[in-house]
Length: 179
Image (cartoon, rainbow, N blue to C red; front, side, top):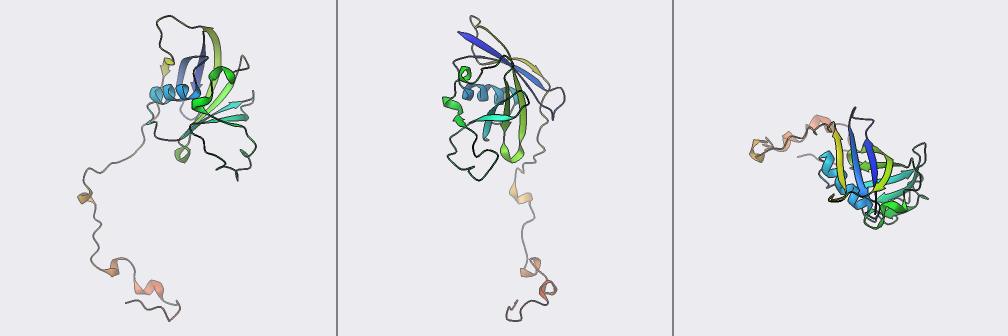
């Protein structure tokens, strides 16, 4: 069995790289799982791989889950072939010795990573694939403050006056009464 070596990098986080080895018969879901683990991502967000041409232009989207025709209105992606990670075997998408992929994670707070195919080789004995073989740099930690006790929040309002001031509504239709 052949294993493939890939290098992931970010143009947003200087110096961040990861090297991965994965068996040619494993899926993009397996690849996704090792990426989120090695980058310290939660894994609770949607993600997609894209095969690309040599200029990083997207060609095929490989999604974490079948989204149906949800993006039908998105003209850029409307005609792009789509696959699901769990069904997409790595060797079926690596057809160029310099194959490039894009990996996008968390579409609300998008993180984009670029992946290049480095080489194919005979799998190593006693190695569990996929595996991250080289880890340089870290993603910055999100600035999220979690409140331990909601009692710390000052959300109590004493009266309706806290919501609005009658002067804010001057000039509105006279039929609307504010008590």
